[in-house]
Image (cartoon, rainbow, N blue to C red):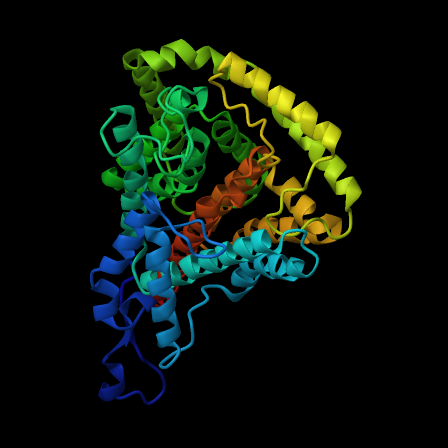
Length: 468
């Protein structure tokens, strides 16, 4: 559905010939046609860097390494600043942008009481980078048709999948880039048992990013009968299945269950016949993708059984229990943004013993026994900021879904709400929101969906004016 122009005849008492000529209604996509149709080279460079954010070690204080994506976003920030000379910064939807700013302001406020101000300052800088990514994407896609925006979403999905495929094929330069990872360790081997990403990390991280793109591609491809988008959606869903990320697969299912009552109460254009058959075809294609990986990859055959055990669940339950104890020690203000609380000596000794046991077993499954995170983004906020502010940050993330649901007349609002619910459910299972790169990619993804939603609204307004 592209934004188009309409011709409206002005009629009324005494309207002469001069007033009966067609009145051109310009859509948002047509304001500055050169801008709307010009190639977005810089945007593509950012998407390429986001899909493969190679990191360069640095000796800069507070910053251990800097990625190509970081450098490009610094340039983007400069261009956004220079834009202020001619026009205000495009915030997308002001209420939604305000919700995205809440975690930043809370993290910045926690500098006052943080137990590790350097770590908290790093967290604040990551939030700044995320907001820049959001504002940059919204600006670059402003005025574009929804079809063209979806073509960028499609390219971004492919750019994310390709490095994972090259990793599985053992192509030089695409091996796991995790610092300090031994090639004989179980964690290293796990990269090759399922579709992972050499820079973003193991399968769960890749699945989290792809889960934000697949529903958009699928819905718009079905609505527009665009085979290229349908194929991209099928491939993206197959890639998610090949990651074997239980969290992502469960999130897609639970989000559908949570969204079903809402979907039943609202009639959406674009559903039409054939939707459920395409959903069934997509699920079948995803299962075929996993079957192919299992058949051709010996490492998957050898270690897939580990994905069926409850070992990971038990370990994450232990992490959640430890987090509750940490919250109990500082319930009101927490430890500061990004700060991992120091453990009591007895707990640390027990943890070291557990690490040694796991290392001896060379367990391939993701153990996550080191005190890295809670694997629950909402609980992590409470650890960082205390109960009151942690709840505020959690509610601000949930508010993104509420905002999408409130825009009932928008063609894309429903699928965007579903997409954001998927992310929220994923946050319950993991701490991807706390990942340095993953948080920036989350904000970038929100920028993509905001641009698509605005374009759909502009196109709908233009169509109504043309029909009137």
